[in-house]
Each structure stands twice: as structure tokens, then as C-alpha cells.
Length: 417
Image 1 (cartoon, rainbow, N blue to C red):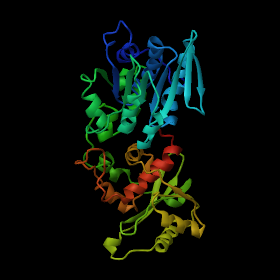
Image 2 (cartoon, one colour):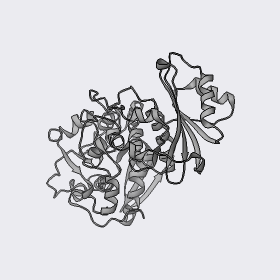
Image 3 (spheres, rainbow, N blue to C red):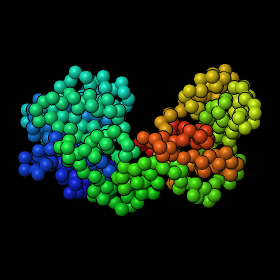
Image 4 (tube, rainbow, N blue to C red):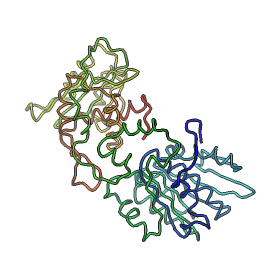
């Protein structure tokens, strides 16, 4: 692989993935393979290697598809790690970045692997018209059903097979209902992976990952379970919030200052003042205005005056604000004092990232931030929803914290989705 992880040996499940298509395998007659389960369990790497080896075992000079949520994540998760292994086995690999094609050849035989990103419903059109001998979906639970089914429909060559991997999601997710639960009738081999199935991980590394997740995310990403999100969103943090509040002196902080914001006129308006040091991000102070409670709706200019007041004498690197707040962005830009950055509004991944940072101490909430503390105790999953959703109440400080964690801190502290 790369220098970051040394492959010691393959586990029994990984060896099954690497050989299920072989003529001597008991699973040779299966049409598909599904590998779901824990993060860092080794399913993605062995599947990408196996997929390419299989393509040369059953086909020659044929076309295949490698699909990820984005092409960037596909290259990071699959292409970059597998190419050195293929080259060590005698394969020649050439990636045409502008065309999103990986060509692999050995002994005069070449196969072509087209790279696709399945991030939204419009992605289905990208793969229309192709004829494929097989398709691999990396992180299939993150892709829309229309894209996956369009790609499957392209596999019209005799002997074509489907390859899926993912981390668990909500048990009402279409992929769980249509493929995981129906694996026998789909003639698919389903393998559930745990971290212990990746023999390259040390106990120390596994313990670090165990500490990253709590609640629903722990059950999904560590135990590999398809479970409904329920209860408080940040249950673990809420259980220990009194012990985790920051009560330092803001004048002693050395770092970069930001303001995060969830804009509202009828709904509450929430802003947080942050100082980001080398080790942590501290929500030092906040502004929270609920027009319904106060009986008066503030204008953009009044909210802006509070923004300047919250910033004080600090140089603010960016004001991170929800992407829909067009009028307030215009107000900020008109005054010419602050730079504005639109937040990445990915709710579930943003919550997961925020949860990790709260639990490991990357994010600290100041004692003065009483609105945030109150919302932490009320911010809940919608247990009646068919997909992961939060109850859209008591969530304005939660949103501005999530915006900041997922837009700024994820990059600073090098968190991947």
C-alpha cells in the first residue's frame, strides 16, 4: 500500500473478498458481493484490489466502472492505495486524470476502469449509454438509488458482477432493504467487517478509533450495525458537559479567530466567537437572539451591529455562515470589515465530525455560551424519520457549531469523511 500503513497479512474475510470469484471458490456462482461494517476494517482496499484482479481473470480488453461519492474520494480511498500493489504484481497502470480513466494492463491484455462520482440524483446521467462488464461502488450507502441502479443497468455483458462496500446507515436505507437484507435472493455474498478483520491495525490504532465515536455512530462505525439514530444527538457530550466547559481567560488565548453563524429573522439568530489554537477550538462567546421570545424582529443591520460587538478587537479570519443567508452576506460585504465563507451544510457528516471533536476535546465550549449548552440538552434525532434526520427545533447554535466544525476545523485538524 502506501507508507502510512503496512500490510502484514490478510484476514480470512479479506481473503474471501480476494478470491470469491475464483473457479475453486465456493462462492464462484454469486453475482455480487456486499462488504459492509466498521470503518478501517480493510474492506475497501481488498475489494479494490480484488475487483481489478477479477477483471483480468474473467475478461480482456473490457470496460468497468469504479464509483465513489466523489471522484476525489474514490481516488483517495481506492486508486491511490491500490496502484503500488498492482505495479508490484507486474501490472502497468496509467491514470488519465482529465478523462477520469484508469487503464491497467498485463501480458498484452488491457482493461479500462472509468471513474464516476455518485453524489446526487443528477449523477445518473453521467453513466448512461455505457456497456460494462462490472461495477464497484465504494461507499454505496452515500449514493442516490437512481445512480446505483443506472450503473447496474449498464452491466449487460455475460458474467458481469456487482461489487458494493459501505459503512452502515439507517436500517430504512434503500440499500439495506434492497440488497443487504435480500442478499440471498439477489444471489449476493454478504460479508460484515469489523476492525479485527484488518490485521494491519495495531491495538493502539483501534483504541483511538473506538474513542472517536459515541452512540449511534459507535454502533454503526465500530460495531457495524444498521441502527436508527435515536435520543440526543450529542448524548455523550451532554452527559459530561459540566466537566468539559472551558473557563479560561480569553485575553490569554493565542490563535486564529473566527465567527460562525446560523442566520435567522423569525427563527433565532446564533453566532459563535471562536479561537483556534494548535490543539483545540474554543467557543469563547456567543450571540443568540430569539425574536419570538423577545417579541421583536431585528433587522440585518441590527444583527450586524451585534456581529461587530461579538468580534470586539479581534481580527476575524472568516465569518462562516449558512449558505442560504444571502441578505446578511450582502450586509457583511457592504460594510467591508469581514470576509465571508459559506458553510458546508452536510448535516449528517457535519454532526459526525462535530461529535468526534467534542468527544476528543478538539472543540471546547465556554461557560459564557449558555444558549449552546441549553441546545446540547435538547437537540434530538427524529426517530420517526425513514432516514437520518434531526428534529428542526432547538438547533440554531447546533447548526452554527456544525458549520464551523465541518467547514473550517475538519480541514485544520485533518479529519476525513
